[in-house]
Image 1 (tube, helix red, strand yellow):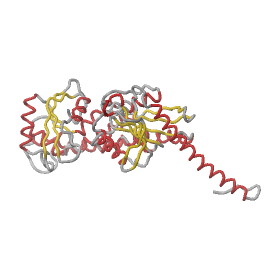
Image 2 (image 1 turned 180 degrees about the vertical axis):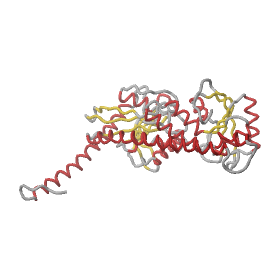
Image 3 (image 1 turned 120 degrees about the vertical axis):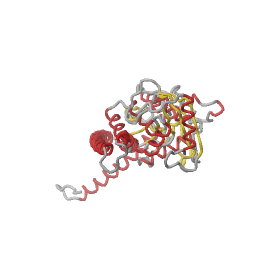
Image 4 (image 1 turned 30 degrees about the vertical axis):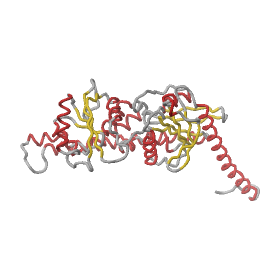
Length: 404
């Protein structure tokens, strides 16, 4: 895998490497990294984990472990090494020299998957911005061969340095252009949201860890055909549909958004600000959780972390524990609706199966209650404004209008 190209014709055999620094929830089996690699079109052939107190400044893992990685890669025919953590540009460059093969990290892997999956103009722009920002920090590695060709001549202004400056200018200009185009998209979305607000439509956004079943739930609720698959990041582009709630005798707006993941690159969070704005501006968030995944508590925390990062932590939230049909019989809940403690506060939780439909009536009823409550609060607030206006109008002499 190259940081400059996302093209994949045949699956590349890769060695997966994870380093345990003593943080909670370390993925000792590198299961998620393996899923990410497979989603990106790579073929994991071996896995290696090790423990360290702190990353090695030069090689991330130290020279002895780097030698072990090289031997293991050669033994299994790996053509690339993939780290579960983010590498600095210098660590990546040093590892490639030491291992004599391409080395990449989780950040680039997620960027590659996003590039493969983006379908809309907005999605492609957002991925391009994140990719440009990532590549901009790794220009040195592309042009060091020019300095070697000069025989180690010292001083400033060598061909490698000149090429880096040219590349940096080109990338900076590309980043500026992409940001300007994204700003236009952001304005369009803001206009659409204001239109919904003027019509008093209650806005609901689906959020959750990648592959929690958000799109399947979205399709089940609105009878749509948004792309849904049992894979990571199947949905990148926001889809919004009207959902009629017979229980509330009104329609609400339902949006399906991009999934979150552990260590989601900050560049992607920033780049996808236009898409994630749907979550920030929602009246209610449906936090969809894969109830069949034993690591769901950690996944919930990761999603909450991103929601806080984008400023959506104050939006009212309902937990939807999905994939009830895949939960082991001994772990099935006693009731489909209860409370779950989230960040020290009780939150409404509903168990559903988007595939079988179990629990969906309870979820629709809960959504209707939220929509009706919001409608009542809206009417009360505006009713108060109207009463105030009537009092002001009554106090004014005939023929004069109230001034504001």
